[in-house]
Image (tube, rainbow, N blue to C red; front, side, top):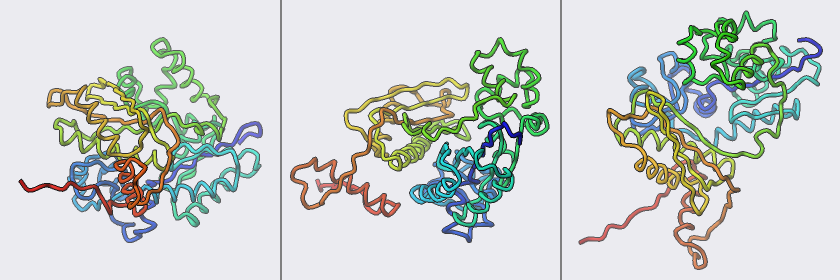
Length: 392
């Protein structure tokens, strides 16, 4: 790389949740497996290993659809607490190289390694090997003078790839890629570009000026800078330090036309959001539900509550309430995407309770917290609240 350029790494774990599971279940290495609900065919998958992906199995796919593509698919219940531990392991390794780290998610991070003055490819191989040997996790690393090019590099070759993309490499390495691979262009925008004959990143580069008037100034500037290696090269460790919201959205593999399908899909999303909030030690006062139909008509509905929560049952109940008030579900009005986000976040106030001395606290709240603490500790539902039915 040129002396006046920054050296940015983007390190991306390969099939992260599945790779974490292989640490405890190495016998699954050559078998197709995915992370998802084990005891229902109506839920959705969080991710799939590379063996399963060869059958067409992917994240956010309905379990029943995945089993049709791969009848011998093994479903593993997710252990998100363990995944967080694995994330901390590889982040600790990265922190030994530079303090300039921007953790973009649980399984990826940007590093500014300019000041190390080392050969980028040799350094990347060293980091990749350490993560594999010490954390037992495979990764791909992209290297570039900007965050965008580093990110495109990490996606270029998986698993265990290392790709350097300088400005002079853009035409050779990026232009042939499909437009969907351009980081920053969402899936819902792809049809718009294809209608204008833009099917590859090269098409976008050659036609950018022609479609300039149809793009917002901000969108045009963003694409122009990314294609010319002048986009951001700032790795700011504080960028996400004040988390504003926690959320996730997933597109179903088929239209959701029944209430049972929609509720099962929603339930899995809520569980993930709840776990992310708990790992961040955050509770939310505002819960937002996003619904989208196959033609991309989207609604967002929110509810603010008096008592902050990160409990998946609370969040699910609120989402169901918002759903029932704002969407009539039938085959003529199906859902294709569901998103749940938590905002107005406050620090989680963890409490320890004695089951036998609940005199001065809210009994219902205390019992619920005790149940949550036990289930979180053992990473499964070891205890749940029951209902006593009286004989009539």
